[in-house]
Length: 224
Image (cartoon, rainbow, N blue to C red; front, top):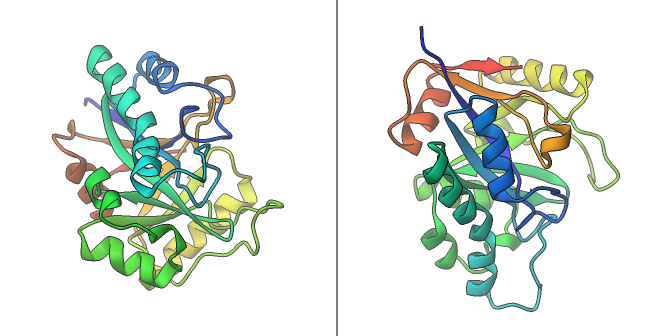
């Protein structure tokens, strides 16, 4: 049976200050690794984003989308499906956000200052999906490592290839306790330290919503 591999968590050096490889370099490598598609989730402007903080909101958001746009060009050339998402940060806790576009961001100046309750409500009101990334990660920049209330999430990352086994095990236990949809991601910032992660679908997704709905319905296999 055919399997279609999708990365759910990837960064580009165009946007994420901590990433080492460009969108084109990343997509070329994912093609070699046999992936069907990639969700670009660069750090939002309230996280480790490389944009000039003096830019206007519109300029910041166009910068925010530049990694995705370059990845899409490369994906179209190589036959890799590329989708736009981002990793929203609140005091070091990160939230993968899917299903919304640049137009949504342009229409919501100041969204970067929202707390998780208001952010979750805004994303969902406009048809988006929110999942907490690496909820038990311990790092100097994280104020407190813990998952937020389950009712604020549509899913949770239970395997992050850059996280410890202990942190991933805690995330898996939390997802099972609260019956949250599970997802896996490489959290790739560089093709040099790439570790296998993401999800497998039985059929090729025809749209981003197909991927989101597959995660929500648990109709996926986790790459761990």
